[in-house]
Image 1 (spheres, rainbow, N blue to C red):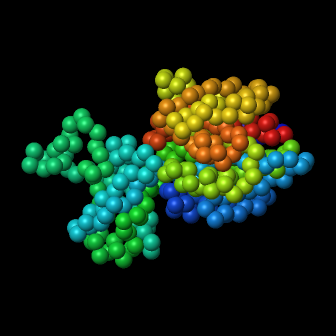
Image 2: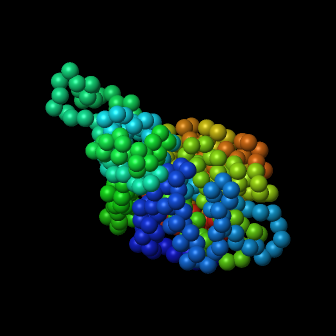
Length: 349
């Protein structure tokens, strides 16, 4: 099976995905984008009771069900309270940090309308009389030190449906992908965790014809806040093998370098992966001449490891794209996205 390797086409797909917002539990924007691409590929897609999107590829032979997962939610912030003066206090969702985002343009996803905002640290031209003076030091800024500035009153925010629990995400001005490198082989954007993996599964879905067994392609919800979507899916399906497609941090401590190759995550802070299934994916990579890196991650967890540790699936593995600046302005090699799809295609067929 031949899969498209055109970097421009893959970057266009990623652009469409990262411009669609999807904080945990408020994933309507990314849902629309995924549905559109699956429909273009001729695959029917349904939402289960947990909010996962599932597309089934019928196998040519009877056999156990295989599931391929990529999570569709992104790290975000959530409103803790709206103060009397209209300042909106936030806390992070899924390892989001204000010192990474900076004074960024935000969208507050109110119940009735979206409210533009700016993540604010306060003025710099201040003395010790102002609490903002401490932020000019070397200590990292924390969520309790900052606020979202909307220039709306508390009453106007209430009318828009901005309240405790409202999600806040980076606006499109900060999400547009940037090409990097002499050959523009890399792409950088927030939310490539896990949009790069979603792109890999969409590439696969458009070219996967008659796999050896039934395959569920699953875009899971709420991975960044506990992997609830994957747990619900695995609990309600008789799945023999579950493979999560993910991002893997580029860091010397893990021996992972950036580039067009894929990463097999041998284990993380939640669980070791299934050795046999991981070796099957490694063999599939060899059949399509894709180089493999191996990583054991300390500060990390994913849909596969959570489902496997909980005994919801008998076999689980994680295939990943090496990613610089994880949970920040992330950078991936476009060829690595295609390589993940090629490896999975070889394994399934």
